[in-house]
Amino acid sequence: MADTRSQILARIRRNLQVTGDEPSRRQTITTRMENHPRGPVPTRGAGGLDTFRQMAEGLDATTELTARANIPAAIAAYLRTRNLPLTLRRGADAYFDGLDFAGITVAQGAASPADETALSHAFAGIAETGTLLLHSGADNPTTLNFLPENHIVVLEAEKIYAAYEDAFDRVRMAHKTLPRTLNFITGPSRTADVEQTIELGAHGPRRLHIIIVQ
Image (tube, rainbow, N blue to C red; front, side):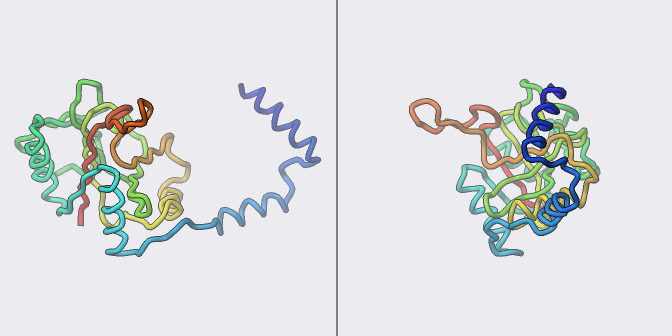
């Protein structure tokens, strides 16, 4: 595959009569990255938070505001109101260390189909679409995002950014190289493949609950 790709790119360069190393072409790319166009930008600050919640809830997610110390209580209340077991699976994210999960059975590691509820920590939220940005790693395994039917995601209010471009800026600042996987989650999993009728939980969680920490 790599050889085929190299051959295709080499043929394109020959036809364009370029090598790819021309200073002017590299400068064009650098300028584009430094001054890339932005998307629609909602109101920042409190307005950004309101926009994020409105967009997320419009796509069947649920949201709530709380303090960091109250995260376990908020999770327990969410599970009880939906008659779900007080059990969950999470990664090794240090953000949750020190929180009192008494009364909730917590397992760590990658999720399996047997897990009913997963807990993740989002890298960022994107106000313009109510989207969560999560990246892969031992602290937040990607399987948490897709296998359990119920997904609870903790997001700090200060990490809600106006647009996708703003969130990508923060990713570049935080990582020298991009994480192996970036997952953008907007509402619960859904499909309309059958008779154009929306069905939740088709390819992932049936419920998405976002706990926003202020």
